Length: 415
Image (tube, rainbow, N blue to C red):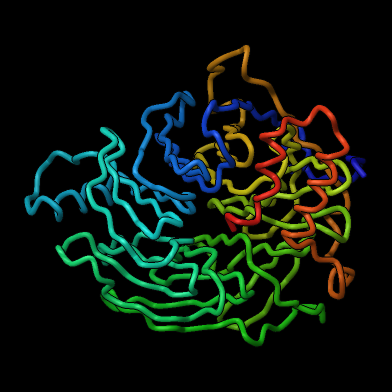
Protein backbone atom coordinates (compact mmCIF):
# COMPACT_ATOMS: atom_id res chain seq x y z
CA UNK A 1 0.00 0.00 0.00
CA UNK A 2 2.79 2.39 0.91
CA UNK A 3 5.29 1.36 -1.79
CA UNK A 4 7.01 4.51 -3.08
CA UNK A 5 8.30 3.00 -6.34
CA UNK A 6 7.36 4.84 -9.50
CA UNK A 7 6.78 8.21 -7.85
CA UNK A 8 7.38 11.41 -9.78
CA UNK A 9 10.08 13.88 -8.62
CA UNK A 10 7.37 16.12 -7.14
CA UNK A 11 5.85 13.18 -5.25
CA UNK A 12 9.28 12.16 -3.96
CA UNK A 13 9.91 15.73 -2.82
CA UNK A 14 6.65 15.74 -0.86
CA UNK A 15 7.48 12.38 0.67
CA UNK A 16 10.63 13.98 2.12
CA UNK A 17 8.91 17.17 3.36
CA UNK A 18 8.24 17.04 7.13
CA UNK A 19 5.36 18.88 8.75
CA UNK A 20 5.68 20.47 12.16
CA UNK A 21 2.72 19.60 14.39
CA UNK A 22 1.58 21.76 17.29
CA UNK A 23 -1.46 20.85 19.38
CA UNK A 24 -3.24 24.01 20.50
CA UNK A 25 -4.76 23.83 23.96
CA UNK A 26 -8.20 25.02 23.06
CA UNK A 27 -11.86 24.14 23.30
CA UNK A 28 -13.69 21.89 25.75
CA UNK A 29 -15.70 20.22 23.01
CA UNK A 30 -15.38 19.30 19.34
CA UNK A 31 -13.92 21.99 17.09
CA UNK A 32 -16.55 22.48 14.40
CA UNK A 33 -15.10 25.24 12.18
CA UNK A 34 -11.79 26.99 11.49
CA UNK A 35 -10.31 29.71 9.31
CA UNK A 36 -6.85 31.26 9.01
CA UNK A 37 -4.67 33.66 7.07
CA UNK A 38 -1.00 34.60 7.29
CA UNK A 39 -1.34 36.16 10.76
CA UNK A 40 -4.44 34.83 12.52
CA UNK A 41 -6.34 31.61 13.19
CA UNK A 42 -9.96 31.51 14.32
CA UNK A 43 -11.81 28.46 15.62
CA UNK A 44 -15.37 27.71 16.72
CA UNK A 45 -16.68 24.83 18.76
CA UNK A 46 -19.66 23.04 20.20
CA UNK A 47 -18.66 24.62 23.51
CA UNK A 48 -20.09 27.93 22.09
CA UNK A 49 -16.66 29.62 22.27
CA UNK A 50 -14.77 31.33 19.45
CA UNK A 51 -10.99 31.55 19.89
CA UNK A 52 -8.38 33.61 18.05
CA UNK A 53 -4.76 32.48 17.70
CA UNK A 54 -1.48 33.75 16.31
CA UNK A 55 -0.82 31.82 13.11
CA UNK A 56 2.97 32.07 13.36
CA UNK A 57 3.42 31.07 17.01
CA UNK A 58 0.24 29.12 17.77
CA UNK A 59 -0.35 31.19 20.91
CA UNK A 60 -3.87 32.08 22.06
CA UNK A 61 -4.78 35.73 21.54
CA UNK A 62 -8.45 36.21 22.38
CA UNK A 63 -11.64 34.42 23.43
CA UNK A 64 -14.82 35.67 21.77
CA UNK A 65 -17.81 34.96 24.01
CA UNK A 66 -21.45 35.60 23.20
CA UNK A 67 -22.88 32.62 21.34
CA UNK A 68 -25.13 30.26 23.31
CA UNK A 69 -25.06 27.20 21.06
CA UNK A 70 -22.68 25.37 18.72
CA UNK A 71 -20.58 27.72 16.60
CA UNK A 72 -20.97 26.32 13.08
CA UNK A 73 -19.02 28.77 10.91
CA UNK A 74 -16.23 31.33 11.26
CA UNK A 75 -14.72 33.71 8.72
CA UNK A 76 -11.71 36.02 9.03
CA UNK A 77 -12.02 39.22 7.04
CA UNK A 78 -8.79 40.19 5.31
CA UNK A 79 -6.87 43.29 6.36
CA UNK A 80 -8.20 45.15 3.33
CA UNK A 81 -11.79 43.99 3.84
CA UNK A 82 -11.59 44.87 7.54
CA UNK A 83 -10.31 48.34 6.69
CA UNK A 84 -13.09 48.92 4.17
CA UNK A 85 -15.87 47.70 6.50
CA UNK A 86 -14.43 49.66 9.45
CA UNK A 87 -14.57 52.81 7.32
CA UNK A 88 -18.17 52.12 6.31
CA UNK A 89 -19.21 51.42 9.89
CA UNK A 90 -17.57 54.59 11.20
CA UNK A 91 -18.61 56.74 8.26
CA UNK A 92 -15.12 58.14 7.84
CA UNK A 93 -12.04 57.29 5.80
CA UNK A 94 -8.77 57.10 7.68
CA UNK A 95 -5.24 55.95 7.00
CA UNK A 96 -5.62 53.74 10.05
CA UNK A 97 -6.77 50.30 8.96
CA UNK A 98 -8.71 49.77 12.18
CA UNK A 99 -9.05 46.42 13.96
CA UNK A 100 -9.18 43.06 12.24
CA UNK A 101 -12.72 41.77 11.92
CA UNK A 102 -14.30 38.32 11.86
CA UNK A 103 -17.75 36.84 11.32
CA UNK A 104 -19.27 33.91 13.19
CA UNK A 105 -22.53 31.99 12.97
CA UNK A 106 -24.18 29.63 15.42
CA UNK A 107 -27.12 27.33 15.99
CA UNK A 108 -28.30 30.00 18.45
CA UNK A 109 -29.68 31.75 15.32
CA UNK A 110 -27.16 34.61 15.54
CA UNK A 111 -24.45 35.98 13.29
CA UNK A 112 -21.89 38.23 14.94
CA UNK A 113 -19.31 40.70 13.67
CA UNK A 114 -16.26 40.81 15.96
CA UNK A 115 -13.31 43.04 16.65
CA UNK A 116 -10.83 40.21 17.18
CA UNK A 117 -8.23 42.53 18.72
CA UNK A 118 -10.26 43.45 21.82
CA UNK A 119 -12.89 40.69 21.72
CA UNK A 120 -15.92 42.96 21.37
CA UNK A 121 -18.98 42.10 19.28
CA UNK A 122 -19.60 45.07 16.98
CA UNK A 123 -22.88 43.76 15.57
CA UNK A 124 -25.21 40.86 16.34
CA UNK A 125 -28.14 39.83 14.15
CA UNK A 126 -30.82 37.31 15.09
CA UNK A 127 -31.82 35.25 12.04
CA UNK A 128 -34.74 33.20 13.47
CA UNK A 129 -33.15 29.95 12.28
CA UNK A 130 -29.98 28.13 13.23
CA UNK A 131 -27.04 29.42 11.19
CA UNK A 132 -25.13 26.61 9.48
CA UNK A 133 -22.97 28.49 6.94
CA UNK A 134 -21.90 32.02 6.07
CA UNK A 135 -19.72 33.94 3.67
CA UNK A 136 -18.71 37.61 3.47
CA UNK A 137 -18.94 39.39 0.13
CA UNK A 138 -16.54 42.36 0.26
CA UNK A 139 -17.73 43.87 -3.02
CA UNK A 140 -21.26 44.13 -1.61
CA UNK A 141 -20.34 44.67 2.08
CA UNK A 142 -22.82 42.02 3.10
CA UNK A 143 -22.92 38.60 4.71
CA UNK A 144 -24.61 35.65 2.99
CA UNK A 145 -26.07 33.24 5.53
CA UNK A 146 -27.30 29.65 5.19
CA UNK A 147 -29.72 28.16 7.69
CA UNK A 148 -30.93 24.86 9.10
CA UNK A 149 -34.15 25.43 7.18
CA UNK A 150 -32.43 25.52 3.78
CA UNK A 151 -32.65 29.28 3.31
CA UNK A 152 -30.07 31.65 1.83
CA UNK A 153 -30.27 35.20 3.18
CA UNK A 154 -28.17 38.34 2.86
CA UNK A 155 -27.55 40.75 5.74
CA UNK A 156 -25.77 44.07 5.98
CA UNK A 157 -24.14 45.54 9.07
CA UNK A 158 -24.45 49.08 7.75
CA UNK A 159 -28.10 49.61 8.66
CA UNK A 160 -30.01 49.67 11.94
CA UNK A 161 -32.50 47.15 10.57
CA UNK A 162 -31.57 43.53 11.26
CA UNK A 163 -33.98 42.13 8.67
CA UNK A 164 -32.47 40.23 5.74
CA UNK A 165 -32.04 42.22 2.54
CA UNK A 166 -32.82 39.08 0.54
CA UNK A 167 -34.20 35.65 1.48
CA UNK A 168 -34.94 32.52 -0.52
CA UNK A 169 -35.79 28.94 0.42
CA UNK A 170 -33.59 26.94 -1.93
CA UNK A 171 -32.81 23.61 -0.21
CA UNK A 172 -34.96 21.04 1.58
CA UNK A 173 -32.30 20.43 4.23
CA UNK A 174 -29.65 22.49 6.01
CA UNK A 175 -27.22 24.60 4.02
CA UNK A 176 -23.84 22.97 4.71
CA UNK A 177 -21.41 25.44 3.10
CA UNK A 178 -21.22 28.78 1.29
CA UNK A 179 -18.07 29.74 -0.62
CA UNK A 180 -17.18 32.79 -2.70
CA UNK A 181 -15.60 31.98 -6.06
CA UNK A 182 -14.70 35.26 -7.72
CA UNK A 183 -18.10 36.98 -7.99
CA UNK A 184 -20.20 33.82 -7.68
CA UNK A 185 -21.49 32.11 -4.55
CA UNK A 186 -21.21 28.32 -4.35
CA UNK A 187 -23.65 26.72 -1.91
CA UNK A 188 -24.15 23.12 -0.79
CA UNK A 189 -26.66 21.36 1.41
CA UNK A 190 -27.34 18.20 3.35
CA UNK A 191 -29.99 17.25 0.79
CA UNK A 192 -27.12 16.53 -1.62
CA UNK A 193 -27.39 19.49 -3.98
CA UNK A 194 -25.02 22.28 -5.01
CA UNK A 195 -26.16 25.61 -6.42
CA UNK A 196 -24.27 28.54 -7.94
CA UNK A 197 -25.50 32.11 -7.53
CA UNK A 198 -24.57 35.52 -8.85
CA UNK A 199 -24.95 38.60 -6.67
CA UNK A 200 -26.64 41.80 -7.80
CA UNK A 201 -26.31 44.16 -4.89
CA UNK A 202 -27.64 42.14 -1.96
CA UNK A 203 -29.90 39.96 -4.13
CA UNK A 204 -29.03 36.50 -5.43
CA UNK A 205 -29.78 35.02 -8.83
CA UNK A 206 -29.32 31.29 -9.36
CA UNK A 207 -27.09 30.22 -12.24
CA UNK A 208 -26.90 26.46 -11.64
CA UNK A 209 -28.34 23.62 -9.57
CA UNK A 210 -26.88 20.11 -9.56
CA UNK A 211 -30.02 18.23 -10.54
CA UNK A 212 -28.59 16.39 -13.54
CA UNK A 213 -24.88 15.80 -13.11
CA UNK A 214 -22.90 14.15 -15.88
CA UNK A 215 -20.34 11.57 -14.68
CA UNK A 216 -17.05 11.81 -16.56
CA UNK A 217 -16.57 8.07 -17.09
CA UNK A 218 -20.01 6.63 -16.60
CA UNK A 219 -19.75 6.41 -12.82
CA UNK A 220 -23.04 6.88 -11.04
CA UNK A 221 -23.24 10.10 -8.99
CA UNK A 222 -25.36 9.34 -5.95
CA UNK A 223 -27.11 12.16 -4.13
CA UNK A 224 -25.67 12.16 -0.61
CA UNK A 225 -25.43 14.84 2.10
CA UNK A 226 -22.62 17.21 1.13
CA UNK A 227 -20.34 17.59 4.15
CA UNK A 228 -17.43 19.59 2.71
CA UNK A 229 -16.93 22.11 -0.08
CA UNK A 230 -13.91 23.89 -1.55
CA UNK A 231 -13.31 26.32 -4.40
CA UNK A 232 -10.31 28.01 -5.96
CA UNK A 233 -10.53 31.44 -7.56
CA UNK A 234 -8.07 30.43 -10.28
CA UNK A 235 -10.11 27.48 -11.56
CA UNK A 236 -13.85 27.03 -12.20
CA UNK A 237 -13.92 23.62 -10.51
CA UNK A 238 -15.94 22.93 -7.35
CA UNK A 239 -14.59 20.25 -5.02
CA UNK A 240 -16.88 18.51 -2.55
CA UNK A 241 -17.00 15.59 -0.17
CA UNK A 242 -19.97 13.57 1.03
CA UNK A 243 -20.82 10.29 2.72
CA UNK A 244 -18.99 8.42 -0.03
CA UNK A 245 -15.36 7.33 -0.31
CA UNK A 246 -14.35 9.77 -3.06
CA UNK A 247 -13.87 13.49 -3.54
CA UNK A 248 -15.91 14.92 -6.40
CA UNK A 249 -14.78 17.57 -8.90
CA UNK A 250 -17.70 19.47 -10.43
CA UNK A 251 -17.40 21.74 -13.46
CA UNK A 252 -20.69 23.51 -12.96
CA UNK A 253 -20.96 25.11 -16.41
CA UNK A 254 -21.12 21.65 -17.98
CA UNK A 255 -22.45 19.67 -15.02
CA UNK A 256 -19.56 17.22 -15.45
CA UNK A 257 -18.27 15.39 -12.36
CA UNK A 258 -15.01 13.51 -11.89
CA UNK A 259 -14.20 11.35 -8.87
CA UNK A 260 -10.89 11.23 -6.99
CA UNK A 261 -9.97 8.41 -4.64
CA UNK A 262 -9.94 9.66 -1.05
CA UNK A 263 -10.12 6.43 0.95
CA UNK A 264 -8.19 3.20 0.52
CA UNK A 265 -11.32 1.13 0.95
CA UNK A 266 -14.75 1.52 -0.60
CA UNK A 267 -16.25 2.99 2.56
CA UNK A 268 -15.45 6.41 3.94
CA UNK A 269 -16.63 9.92 4.63
CA UNK A 270 -15.05 13.28 3.75
CA UNK A 271 -15.89 15.84 6.41
CA UNK A 272 -13.32 18.47 5.42
CA UNK A 273 -11.79 19.75 2.21
CA UNK A 274 -9.83 22.89 1.33
CA UNK A 275 -8.17 24.31 -1.78
CA UNK A 276 -5.22 26.71 -1.88
CA UNK A 277 -3.73 28.14 -5.06
CA UNK A 278 -1.69 25.00 -5.75
CA UNK A 279 -3.04 22.24 -3.50
CA UNK A 280 -6.21 20.32 -2.71
CA UNK A 281 -6.42 19.01 0.86
CA UNK A 282 -9.06 16.49 1.92
CA UNK A 283 -9.72 14.58 5.12
CA UNK A 284 -9.92 10.81 5.17
CA UNK A 285 -10.58 8.22 7.86
CA UNK A 286 -9.63 4.55 8.12
CA UNK A 287 -12.75 2.96 9.54
CA UNK A 288 -10.78 -0.10 10.71
CA UNK A 289 -8.20 1.79 12.76
CA UNK A 290 -10.04 5.06 13.41
CA UNK A 291 -6.98 7.03 12.24
CA UNK A 292 -7.67 10.18 10.24
CA UNK A 293 -5.41 11.56 7.55
CA UNK A 294 -5.11 14.49 5.16
CA UNK A 295 -4.60 13.68 1.50
CA UNK A 296 -2.67 16.23 -0.57
CA UNK A 297 -3.07 16.73 -4.33
CA UNK A 298 -1.63 19.29 -6.73
CA UNK A 299 -3.81 21.79 -8.57
CA UNK A 300 -5.00 22.05 -11.23
CA UNK A 301 -3.94 18.52 -12.25
CA UNK A 302 -5.18 16.90 -9.00
CA UNK A 303 -2.16 14.58 -8.97
CA UNK A 304 -1.81 12.76 -5.67
CA UNK A 305 1.28 13.87 -3.69
CA UNK A 306 1.01 12.20 -0.29
CA UNK A 307 -0.93 11.77 2.94
CA UNK A 308 -0.45 12.89 6.53
CA UNK A 309 -1.68 10.62 9.30
CA UNK A 310 -3.07 12.76 12.13
CA UNK A 311 -3.43 10.64 15.24
CA UNK A 312 -5.18 11.76 18.39
CA UNK A 313 -7.80 13.85 16.64
CA UNK A 314 -10.12 10.96 15.72
CA UNK A 315 -12.39 12.31 12.98
CA UNK A 316 -11.35 15.55 11.23
CA UNK A 317 -14.34 17.89 11.03
CA UNK A 318 -12.76 21.02 9.57
CA UNK A 319 -9.54 22.29 8.04
CA UNK A 320 -8.17 25.42 6.41
CA UNK A 321 -4.78 26.29 4.94
CA UNK A 322 -2.55 29.04 3.63
CA UNK A 323 0.13 28.69 0.99
CA UNK A 324 3.31 30.70 0.54
CA UNK A 325 3.39 31.56 -3.16
CA UNK A 326 7.19 31.83 -3.16
CA UNK A 327 8.11 28.35 -1.98
CA UNK A 328 4.68 26.58 -2.01
CA UNK A 329 4.96 25.81 1.69
CA UNK A 330 1.75 25.10 3.59
CA UNK A 331 0.26 25.97 6.96
CA UNK A 332 -2.82 24.01 8.03
CA UNK A 333 -5.25 24.29 10.92
CA UNK A 334 -7.21 21.10 11.61
CA UNK A 335 -10.16 20.66 13.96
CA UNK A 336 -11.79 17.66 15.58
CA UNK A 337 -11.54 16.49 19.16
CA UNK A 338 -8.38 18.62 19.21
CA UNK A 339 -7.14 21.71 17.38
CA UNK A 340 -3.88 21.13 15.51
CA UNK A 341 -1.55 23.47 13.65
CA UNK A 342 0.62 21.86 10.97
CA UNK A 343 3.18 23.52 8.73
CA UNK A 344 5.95 22.49 6.41
CA UNK A 345 9.10 22.83 8.46
CA UNK A 346 10.76 25.47 6.30
CA UNK A 347 8.16 28.20 7.01
CA UNK A 348 7.88 27.85 10.78
CA UNK A 349 10.20 27.89 13.74
CA UNK A 350 9.90 25.39 16.58
CA UNK A 351 7.66 27.12 19.05
CA UNK A 352 7.68 24.54 21.80
CA UNK A 353 9.99 21.54 21.40
CA UNK A 354 8.19 19.66 24.17
CA UNK A 355 4.82 19.92 22.44
CA UNK A 356 5.75 19.97 18.78
CA UNK A 357 6.46 16.88 16.72
CA UNK A 358 7.28 16.16 13.11
CA UNK A 359 4.95 14.36 10.71
CA UNK A 360 6.28 12.90 7.50
CA UNK A 361 3.91 12.35 4.56
CA UNK A 362 3.53 8.82 3.29
CA UNK A 363 2.55 7.67 -0.17
CA UNK A 364 -0.46 5.44 -0.88
CA UNK A 365 -0.35 3.95 -4.36
CA UNK A 366 -4.10 3.35 -4.49
CA UNK A 367 -4.72 7.10 -4.55
CA UNK A 368 -2.97 7.38 -7.92
CA UNK A 369 -5.51 5.04 -9.52
CA UNK A 370 -8.79 6.14 -11.11
CA UNK A 371 -11.80 6.00 -8.84
CA UNK A 372 -13.93 2.96 -9.60
CA UNK A 373 -17.63 2.25 -9.50
CA UNK A 374 -17.45 0.30 -6.25
CA UNK A 375 -18.93 3.09 -4.17
CA UNK A 376 -21.90 3.60 -6.46
CA UNK A 377 -24.31 1.14 -4.90
CA UNK A 378 -23.67 0.71 -1.23
CA UNK A 379 -20.35 2.17 -0.18
CA UNK A 380 -21.46 5.21 1.77
CA UNK A 381 -20.75 5.79 5.43
CA UNK A 382 -23.44 7.91 6.99
CA UNK A 383 -22.94 10.04 10.07
CA UNK A 384 -25.18 7.64 12.00
CA UNK A 385 -23.14 4.59 10.95
CA UNK A 386 -19.87 6.23 11.94
CA UNK A 387 -21.43 7.27 15.22
CA UNK A 388 -22.42 3.65 15.93
CA UNK A 389 -18.94 2.38 15.01
CA UNK A 390 -17.32 4.95 17.27
CA UNK A 391 -19.69 4.07 20.13
CA UNK A 392 -18.87 0.37 19.79
CA UNK A 393 -15.16 1.16 19.79
CA UNK A 394 -15.56 3.31 22.87
CA UNK A 395 -17.50 0.63 24.72
CA UNK A 396 -14.87 -2.00 23.96
CA UNK A 397 -11.97 0.15 25.13
CA UNK A 398 -11.87 0.52 28.91
CA UNK A 399 -9.38 3.37 28.72
CA UNK A 400 -11.66 5.73 26.84
CA UNK A 401 -12.58 8.76 28.88
CA UNK A 402 -16.31 9.10 29.56
CA UNK A 403 -16.32 12.70 28.40
CA UNK A 404 -14.73 11.78 25.06
CA UNK A 405 -17.33 9.07 24.60
CA UNK A 406 -20.08 11.59 25.21
CA UNK A 407 -18.61 13.85 22.53
CA UNK A 408 -18.60 11.06 19.97
CA UNK A 409 -22.16 10.08 20.74
CA UNK A 410 -23.44 13.44 19.59
CA UNK A 411 -21.14 14.29 16.70
CA UNK A 412 -23.94 14.10 14.17
CA UNK A 413 -25.75 17.01 15.77
CA UNK A 414 -23.27 19.61 14.54
CA UNK A 415 -23.47 18.80 10.87
